[in-house]
Amino acid sequence: MKPRTALLLNGSPRRENSLALASYLSELLAEKGLECETMQAYRTPLNDLLSALEKAEVVVLSFPLYVDSLPGGLTQVLEEIARQFDGQGRSFAAVVNCGFPESGQAAVSLGIAESFARTVGFRWLGGLSMGAGPSMGGRPISECGGMLRNVIAGLKVAADDIVQGDEISDEAVRLVGMPLVPHLVYRLMAGQHFRTQAKKNGAKIYDRTYEWKRR
Ligand SMILES: Cc1cc2nc3c(=O)[nH]c(=O)nc-3n(C[C@H](O)[C@H](O)[C@H](O)COP(=O)(O)O)c2cc1C
View 1 (cartoon, rainbow, N blue to C red):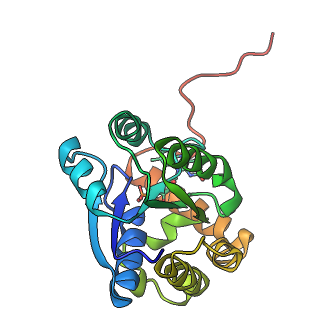
View 2 (spheres, rainbow, N blue to C red):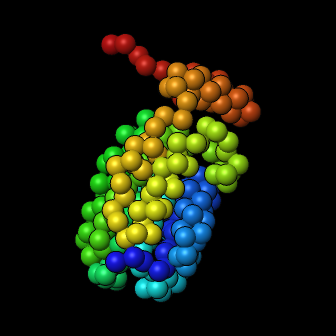
């Protein structure tokens, strides 16, 4: 069944990269005629979340990878939803972005999102995983330039799938999961970023709070 309403949930405690992905997907779905609402999973009263879920025929959760999993606070919110909500007749998809350049890092977290969706009774549409998320720098996706061209193409395919009421296609998963830049380039960029941050905070990158002592 083709959905008419969509809820885009930002599962990041910060309002940055996950929100940029959720907002972009919301724009794509709205262009195709869906009535869309975007909400923060964090710091939104549970009753407001539950009424938004009630109205939505499809829910898309966008979250960052934290320690190979979902952020702890988001897990708490999802557990509460699982206790109080029945997702029967609704569909659920997830988009995760992670700091490492390999999108495959987030496979386990998508498994957790799927398990949540099925436990609650949602129809699971599938998950998209994007590596090198910090490259977005919290900017709107349309301002991120050519580096995100495959992600954008993949999100467009995924939006078409969602609007048709279909599961997210392998092509969308493949495009969103492609490396943004060669891994070596990303490592050099990330290394420079960490060095700058360390300098700003008066630290050196190899500073240690302890010394390893050989026995
Ligand atoms: C507490 C914390 C834990 C993280 N753990 C991981 C991780 O295990 N693997 C990874 O690839 N990125 C990890 N990251 C990086 C984030 O997934 C990445 O910066 C993401 O773009 C943040 O998205 P957001 O702006 O929506 O919060 C972590 C970031 C934080 C703050």
